[in-house]
Image 1 (tube, helix red, strand yellow):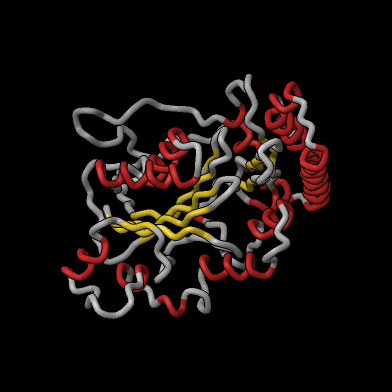
Image 2: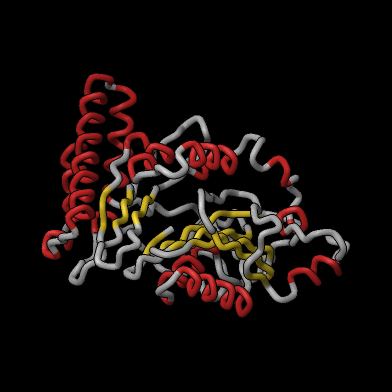
Length: 337
């Protein structure tokens, strides 16, 4: 997930369906997120960048740094100040739905059904040639390209429908705080735990008024209930955020065409490590944990209030905004120490 200086935000999720996933060299969903943000100044342009790259290079490749193979196709949630799109893929084939209103979410299953606003030119013919669609009944992308019974998407359990329920509950009145609360909902299973743990969350406020800044809140840490959503605003002069920058360990072996690591390298940045240590304290030393959690919550409330003031008053101090995120990281680290 990420954002750029134009107010474009993109996130992706892993999806699986009828189409087999190739094991050759291709672009990861995370590559497509990064390239879409690098090259587009609107949500629809980001969509076009992604599908053009998908057509040219395909998608796939191992998403793990170890030798264990883990591959998938991708769905994307793409938004800017004016519009939002859901893009879902199956190999090089894809369908996109423009979000006209209400709430929308993605997870580990295809969710675009009969409302398709843009599509791969061969999407329907390919499905027909494989016997997935008879060419007569109304074309339903999710039902055709996945094994999921789409009728169960909003009624059964799972991250997709639980996320939709939480969003729909607050439809029309979602604030940044409510979004953070939703992302912290443990029972819904929105956040992954265990081997594929959620490593961070992001909430973006994209005002339609062009004179107001887009404000992005990033945790940069796992365990949402014990994390601080720290504000970031794109302004000139921002330097590299070293304490939330993961270390690098070199490139893949160009001869053997495989990662040079036999085990997963430790890419945790400084804040991530301190956060994890603090999480252990919170779980084991109850009094200290309560005190630390209270300070974390107060810091976040203070930053949210500060950002609301900027949006209400329409005034942004560029000099303060340059260090906005990094200063909040320092304050969070002080709590952990």
